[in-house]
Amino acid sequence: MLGVILLNNMIPLIDGVALNIDFSQYDKHYVNLLTKQYRCLSNKEAIEKINKIANTVYKEVTEHQNPFFVSLSCDFKKLEDAANQYILNLED
Image (tube, rainbow, N blue to C red; front, side, top):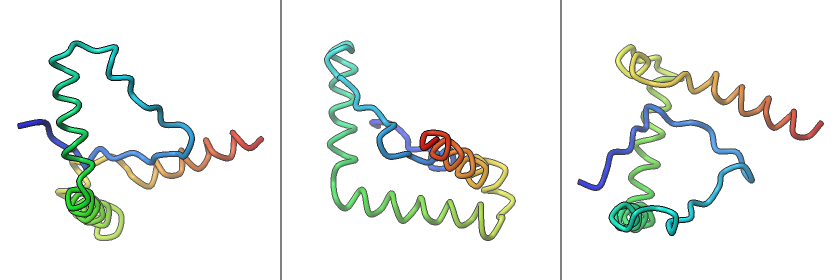
């Protein structure tokens, strides 16, 4: 296994704020793992599948308020509000 994507812990990504990771600063074994994960996640089919599942989780929490998903997930709306406020503060 290369890792797990915890979609229940998604956070909004603000353009221009995320940083690229410089793999060269890590141990070679960790770099190998990161490289394999990057390759897996760069695959078009994988991206589509992840997006589909992420949208399902998001809707279960925000629209359907499914108790199971809500209990395990971040408060997506609260995080979106905070991200929007951050963007507004950047513009000031």
